[in-house]
Length: 366
Ligand SMILES: Cc1cc2nc3c(=O)[nH]c(=O)nc-3n(C[C@H](O)[C@H](O)[C@H](O)COP(=O)(O)OP(=O)(O)OC[C@H]3O[C@@H](n4cnc5c(N)ncnc54)[C@H](O)[C@@H]3O)c2cc1C
Figure (cartoon, protein in one colour):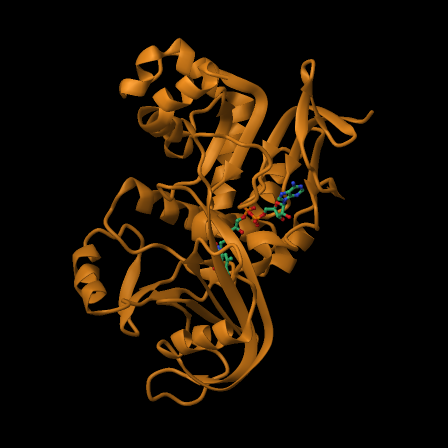
C-alpha cells in the first residue's frame, strides 16, 4: 500500500495551494474531478480585490491576503492582470459609509471613477494557476476516511496526515464547523463597453466591483458574483446570467454582449466569514475535559483528532485568502506557529457555549 506524509482532499484553490506548500514532503492531492475543474474554484471570476471597510482585524486579514497573493502569483509567473480595481458604492447608504471608511483604509487608493481606486487589484485565470503550480495529483473521489492504527486510510492509500479542502461538500461531520454554501455565477463574453460618456473601448481602465465584479482581459469580459444563499437546487441558467449582465450594466455601459461561457458554483463560507483552518478538535474529549466550556469558559485543554486538518471557508475571496491560509497551515503543522484568527478553535468555543450541553446529553444517552 502506498504511503504519503500528507494527503490533501479537494483540488480547489485551497487544496492546491496547501499541497504546493507541503510539496517538500511526500504529498498527494486528490480531487474527484481535477484541479480547479469543479467546485467554486472553477466558477470563480478569480478577481483579487481589496476590501473597503473599517480598519478591523477582518479587513486587515483580507487586504493583507490580497497583497501577499498578488506577489505570490507574480513570483510563480502567473499573470495577475494588475491594472487596479475601483470599488464602487452600491447605493446612497454605501456612499455615506465610504465617507466614513476613507480614513480607515490602510492600502494606497485614489478617489476615481465614482469610487475608490486601488492599484493593488487584479485577476488570475484558474487555467493559468493550474498550469504553473505543479504538484503530485490524482483524480479520485473519496467517500470516507478512517483510522487504521496510527494511519489514516484514504482510498487505497495510507497517511499520517489528512487535510480536508472539500469546499462546500462535507466529507465528515464536524459538529462545531458549520460551512454554508452560497451559489453564484461567472459569465464571459464579447461585446462593446464604455465608461461614462467615453469612447467605446476594448479595454477598461481597471477592474470594477459593485454588486458584481467586472473586468476585461484581452477583449474578453468577465462578470462574476455569488449571491444566493441556501439554494442547493441552483444551477447555471441563462435567465440568471442576464440578471448578472444587468448588474454589470450599472457599472459599465455594455452593448451587443454575446455570452461565450456561463459557469456556476457554490462557494463555502463560515458563520463569521473568517476562513476555517487548523486541526480538527476531538469534540467529545474536549467537552469532557473542560466541564465549564458549556458555560462559556475557554478550554484549558484541547484534544485533537490526530493528523486531521481542515482548510475551508474561503468565502468570496478564495483566490487571495487561500494563499495566506495555506501558508499559515503549513507553518502551523511544521513549526507549530499559531493560526490566530483563522483557527477553528473560535468556532468550537462559540458552538460549545450554545450547543455543548445538549450535545453531551445526547452522547451520554446513546
Ligand atoms: C461565481 C463565483 C465567483 C467567485 N468570484 C471570486 C473572485 O472573483 N475572487 C475570489 O477570490 N474568489 C471568488 N469566488 C470564491 C472562490 O471561488 C472560493 O472561495 C474558492 O474557490 C474556494 O476554494 P476551495 O478550494 O475552498 O473550494 P472548491 O473550489 O469548491 O474546491 C473543493 C474541491 O473539493 C473537491 N471535493 C469535494 N469533496 C470531495 C471528495 N469527497 N473527494 C474528492 N474531491 C472532493 C471538489 O471536486 C472541489 O474541486 C467566487 C466563487 C463563485 C462561486
